[in-house]
Image (cartoon, rainbow over all chains, first blue to last red; front, side, top):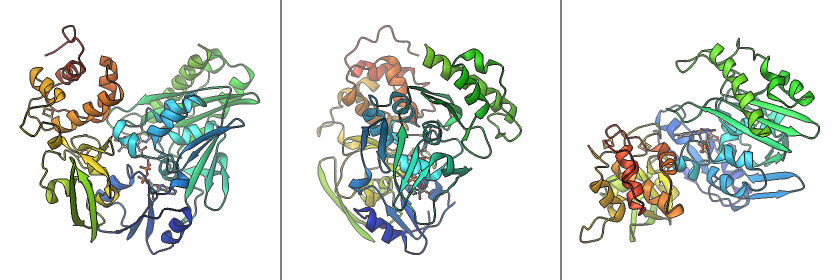
Length: 263
Length: 161
Ligand SMILES: Cc1cc2nc3c(=O)[nH]c(=O)nc-3n(C[C@H](O)[C@H](O)[C@H](O)COP(=O)(O)OP(=O)(O)OC[C@H]3O[C@@H](n4cnc5c(N)ncnc54)[C@H](O)[C@@H]3O)c2cc1C
Ligand code: FES
Ligand code: FES
């Protein structure tokens, strides 16, 4: 690792100021950034820790919306969102392993937008909103591609809001070495339609599978999606699975999620 | 350099560290507590698990400065001062829960965190909780058996090796 300074602000305003320094970068749970720094894939000169910012921690639920502070750990979400939005708590409780969940945060996950990360699928399927220090960004406008988001330089994810669906399920096919999904699908059933978000599959990162959404909005059953095939042409192909295999898994995970909701 | 102060296994500990100094480096190199192991570069193996303010964390994936003011416990704090092993450590010995021993400090610290939250886990709970602790030797069966035994449950029916 190259060396860097560490700043420990206790308010969002101080963090924003600290991030204005040259080559400054936020550090949240460090569960992605620290391994990246060890591999010398990044060389910030200042890390601005968000860990001590109380106003970015915690969970609240009201009027059909769950709001989670950007520096809230996966473990806290798994525990505290279980009543308000069980499918989201279940997603958080299956990220990585217990030690990763004790440090890793929702803000870090959503800012990083790893093409195989869990939260982006939850945020997109739940028609969520990413809240930053300057604005609110609808999920549909936020996730722009692999490791790409609508965030500007120095902008901090301070909270993430989720609309609570009538029913939802996150189906994750584990890549057992990394503990990330090989492919995972989040299905959320709202009164006005169904949203289906897929992670781990596309070279463009998380996406909505609109054919499945249309079919499920008309008929929420496994049969409604049984004949659908996701397009494998722009899917990730690596030693863990070909694009065609991932496209197949998208269908299987979607059917399983629907079956779990209807069970 | 920044001065860090924390409590390690109940004793005050301090030192001067760089921004990039990992908690595990501080523990091993500055404190001389080499029981906490480093088994990977990728935050995946769990050999480095310690408790920070009572929670299991990978000490290779946390900066020493982030532990400013924290209560840290490591494998060295598990046995009694006279060397008597704690219940989990004794169960690992009784049930042959280790071979080379490299993963063992992390396994014991993860097991301690599990049993604190879930004093009577099922075999499946134990296996899931150890998702982030990799063992190259044992095949896990005896580790799971040892943790079940440490929780005071009958392990005669659990497969061993
Ligand atoms: C062994 C292992 C298994 C894992 N398994 C999974 C898994 O199954 N599913 C999954 O989704 N993830 C998984 N992860 C990743 C984990 O969820 C990370 O915690 C998460 O991706 C990043 O969150 P963090 O808080 O650790 O962020 P950090 O590592 O601190 O930061 C990540 C990036 O986001 C930026 N950043 C951080 N916070 C903010 C913010 N609030 N605003 C703006 N930018 C910010 C940082 O500058 C950095 O670029 C795993 C990680 C490990 C080590
Ligand atoms: S040394 Fe492997 S996870 Fe920390
Ligand atoms: S006993 Fe050798 S790695 Fe687990």
